[in-house]
Amino acid sequence: MDALLHYSDGRIAAMEVTSAAAEGQRQLYALLTKRYETLPNPGTWTWSATVGSPRDLPELAERCERIILTCEARGVRNPRYAYDLYFAGDPDIAWLIGSTVDLHGSPELPKWDDEKKRERPLFVTQGGRGGTVDETLSGFATAMEAVIAQDHVQKRIAKLAASKHVEKHLFIVVDDSAVPFEVFYALTTRDVLPPTGPALPGSVTHLWLLVPFSPWLFLVTDDGLTRHNRSTPE
Picture (spheres, helix red, strand yellow):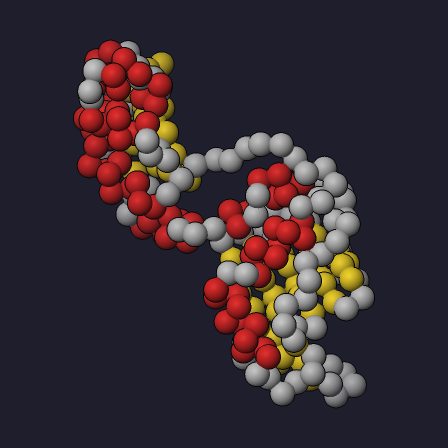
């Protein structure tokens, strides 16, 4: 058990704490931090890249220098839309178009940084997301039920089920990648209480849901869904 909660009236509750992200996201975060945050830039422009899947990072590292030199020679800022090179059979451009990688060159910003007296490498970051917004948060319950269904979360639920304590708390930190963009964006920008919460899983009596960048902490019990302001003591 991750923790035991001791109440002033003598009651004791069991608690399990975990986090949830989309498949591959933790690996992507780790690789971008430890190994692939920057890559060589053989050109003269400043270049940046975004990546949506960890599986594409080794290929990007192997191909990026050729892609940069090819595109600078032809004045191509965004290789993903270099369809003339694609139809001409360029294997690197063909790979890029089919991957989660997006490369962008800035010819107006030379690679050499005069102020810092050094060259700018190819910076690699996580790909962004976008889309519509779930203004009413009607998809909140479904999104969180998908989070709860993840295998490692289910293992935490099973641990709680084996606890002798009547009150069982499951606390999940939900990464933005684990929920659809329209739900995540609404949670961080809208002052709306979702109409319903997810069903309590197994023998869990208190389900806590924390989404980074949202001001709210959500609690699901048999009495329904409530939310609590993370910055205001209650």
